Length: 120
Image 1 (cartoon, one colour):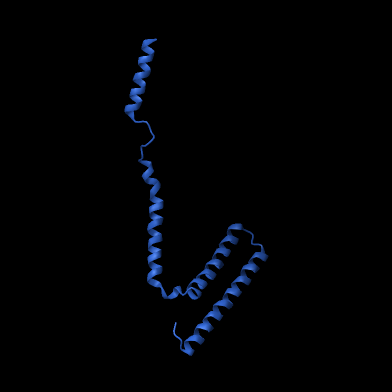
Image 2 (image 1 turned 135 degrees about the horizontal axis):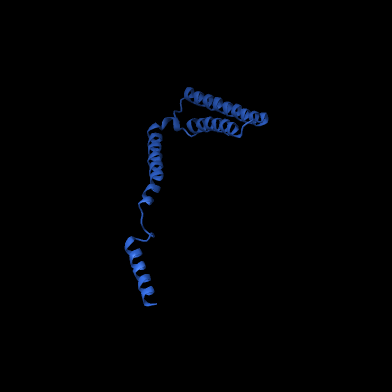
């Protein structure tokens, strides 16, 4: 950050505005809680929208992530890649035959069973 007084005033003003907005959204959260929304799903949706807006403001302004677009997009791409891998990972277990008896072992067991019957 620059140490020029005009830039400092602008930053302090931005922090004040965001702090005020966080206060307003907290009041909205309390208000929504007091209203007792009819549907639980609607209440959760409203709460998540408010929390997302508050979290975005904190991350962008107080954590200075609004100047880190390259790193943010990199993390987003990495998240999508890991998500796809985790979604597709169970598909690899469908073709996994470890622990399932093969036709050869079944045939051998059936032959042994027939041999035991023949001996009796």
